[in-house]
Length: 118
Image (cartoon, rainbow, N blue to C red; front, side, top):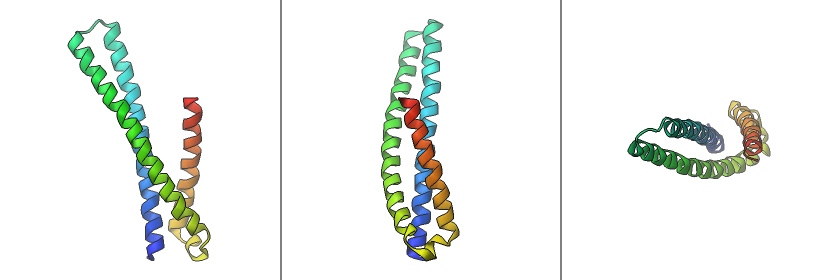
């Protein structure tokens, strides 16, 4: 496996993994918001409620952290992917095909994420 091919495979995996982390924290944040809301409605102990709110704040901070990590990984992936697009030998590889699928999937997922936030 050539260095370019190896780099493409690595950057593809990193972009995929960081996007999954971002989505995981978004889901956890939604769950924590519901938990805090439920605790508030039930009139739970103030200490427990405060701790649940702390967990929520930590989760929210992880969303921005994982989003930043993803953006960095996405930009690096795109640079390697675009370079591979100009290389006919790389374009014929299984790794390039996987990168192309990941590129299309993540591009679409980002558009959906932006639309959901708007």
